[in-house]
Length: 165
Image 1 (tube, rainbow, N blue to C red):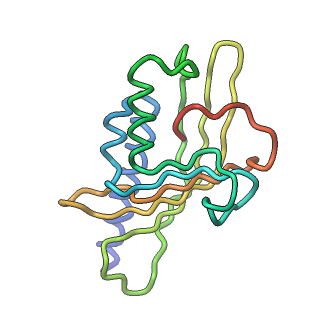
Image 2 (spheres, helix red, strand yellow):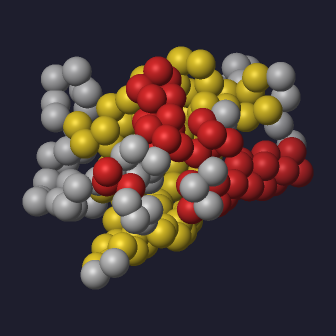
């Protein structure tokens, strides 16, 4: 890949992550869900840098079906934790594409940091973490096959996490 191609790819991936954050902030969860591949996994581990969601406790560990259920629940208006809906603002930064020599597959591993300001009546909280996305290309579009958000304070007592990071 030439240097110019790498610049374009970096920009394309950055714009994808910024779009994902904007869709969440605007509560366009059905559109956010469409960013996911059919076998996508969304994981927010608890208790440090967990490496095995089948063995360790997780704050969120959703396969594609559970993601769909979460989105449907938010859209239904029946998610008690979403009344009133939290207002969020995402900041996505330090985006780095992991390079693995001469990758011929269309899988990209992307690392970033995220800060999410969540506001509800009576309180505001900042969620900060390191994010890893595995992105693949399907029909010319990037899709999320895996997303892991490791909150910097996930080994401490946390308030209820009831929205999408």
